Length: 422
Image 1 (cartoon, one colour):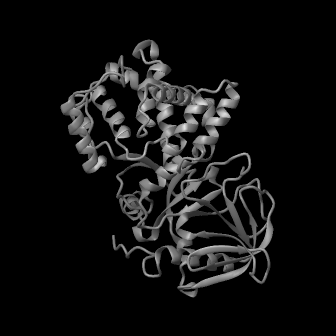
Image 2 (spheres, rainbow, N blue to C red):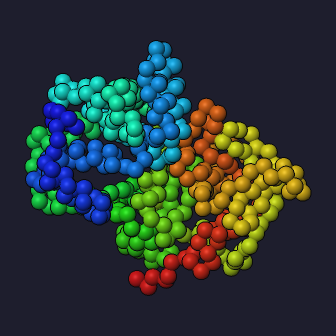
Image 3 (cartoon, helix red, strand yellow):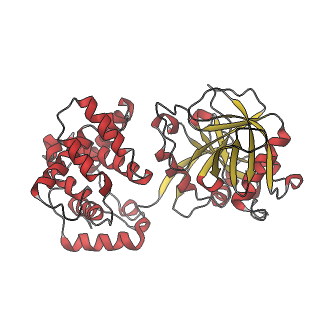
C-alpha cells in the first residue's frame, strides 16, 4: 500500500544482498520488515524480471503486443487479440504473467493511497517485461508501456477471472493492510523460512472432520507426510500402509501419490488449472490398499498391454471404441483394430492421470481414468472437458493398464515404501 511502490527504488546494498540470497537458495530466503523495506523487495522483483535472458513477454511476441496496444478497436476485440497472443507463451510464462498482472491490478486499485495508476505501473513494467535488444528507443518504450498497461487494466477479462476470485483477492489485500497497520510480527514468526507452505491434509476422506495443517518445503515427500500423520489415525496405522491421495474436480477424480513424490509440486501444479477445477481440491491420508492391488504380484512387471477401450478426448462428451496400446512408456490409440493408423500418443512422463471421470460424461463402464498434459489443464471453448478419458469393463483390465503405467513411471522395485515397524 506504500506510496510509490515499484516507482521508488530500494537500498542498493539490500537489493544486492537479497538478489544474491535468492539466487543461492530462493526457498530459504527470509523476508522481515526489520531487514528489508517493501521498496527493497519490489526493486528485487523488477530486477529479477529485467535480468531474465529471455523477457517474460517473449521476444517473438514483442512486435505483436506493441501493435495491439496501438490499435483503435473495441475493448472486446482488443481482449481477443491480447488473449490469442498470450496463449502462445510457454505455460510457465503464461501462469507467471497471469499472477503478476493480477498483483499489479490490485496495486492500481489502491492508487488513491499508493499513487500508482495503471499508466504509472505500465511505464515501469513495460520495459521491464518486454526488454528487447536494439529496441530501446522512446517510441518502443512507449508502446511497451501501453501494452503492459492494457494487460493490467484488462486482467479480469483476459484471464477469465471470476468475480468470486477478485472478491477473495480484495479481502486478502484488506486483511494484509490491517495486519501491517496494527500487528507486530514476533521474532518467532519473522524467523520462519519464506519458502514453506502449509496445507490441510484430511484423514480418511475429503468429507472427514479431521484435518491437520502440514508444513511443506520443496523436498518433502508423500511418504514423509504419511509418517508425520500416521499416529493421528484411530487406531494408529503403520505409515507403509498409508498413502496420500489427490482428490480433484469436486471429488470426481482421484490419484494416489507415489511415496517419493514431492507434495509441494503437486499443490503447485493446481495453479495451472482453471479456478473452478482447483477450488475444491484436497489431499487425503488414507489406506494404500488400492495401490497394493494395482501392483500385486499377478500383474508384476508388465512390458506392454493392448486392447479395445472406450475413449473421449477433451473436445467430446461421448465415448467411442478404439484400439489402445501401452508400450515403451507411451499410451497410443489407433483408428483400426489392426493398429495400422495411429491417431494419437502420449509419453507417460508428460501426463498426469487420475482414476475416474467427470460426472457429466459417463462412459457406462466399470472403470475409467482421465489424463491431462502437465502444466496444460485449462479448458477452452473448443476443449470444454477437463481431460481425455479412457474406460474399460473388467477389473482385471483396470489393474493391467494402471500397473503398466505405474511400472513405466517408477520401476518394479520402487513402488511401495519400506515396512514401518512403528
